[in-house]
Image (cartoon, rainbow, N blue to C red; front, side, top):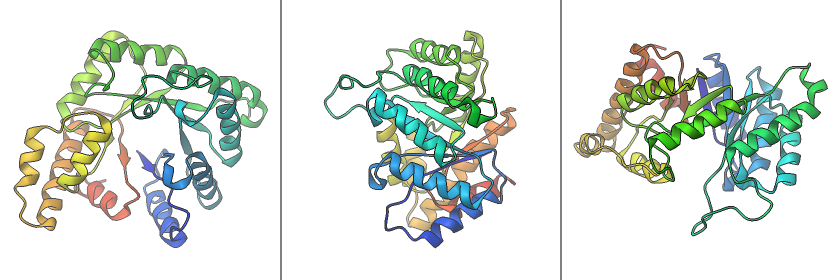
Length: 281
């Protein structure tokens, strides 16, 4: 069990933030991942939230780190800064390219695989601080396909390359159908992927949220999901339909023998608790 947290804006209520962190800690998650976002000054906000988590709980934080966050030298300093803040693992991402661009600027690492190599270089440098251990290295994977991939085989080739470069596990990006995830796992295993492929679950609280996340993820929302959410006549009914579908999706995955979940909380403790209670966790 793990959760994703988003660094808040600088004017966020610290009491609400502490309540969120404490509420998630009650579930004894194996780790929490902390994203980066423009509204919290990117990795500055990530480091600040991780530092607060480390100071107030025993939670194990991992940090999202994207190639788009800076040049190779800048990323090297950020990795050191995040380790200082309490990070003992990273989710290595390429990140979204700037609008209209087909590649990152000169001096930037072009792929998540390059970022994995850089993290391990800094890990070796910092080995004395890690008790001769290692940082957890996680990556993204795409049950519904990456928007820039030519085909499903290309997605598998990239995932295999990440595994060869030391990735310990992968967290799926958004998907809406349990069978999409289960088929992806089966294809990955047949191709030689052996690391855990942890399903990332986004509670579907509204049609607007679902459609926005579909656009951001570059995938099409299934017509079945759109039709069911469109049946609602009130926001409360829309929420109930969406959460029922979210619980159904999650139960189907767990019933198939999947060994873990990663919940995209959107910093909403009540919704996260609601989903977990619906699946008796």
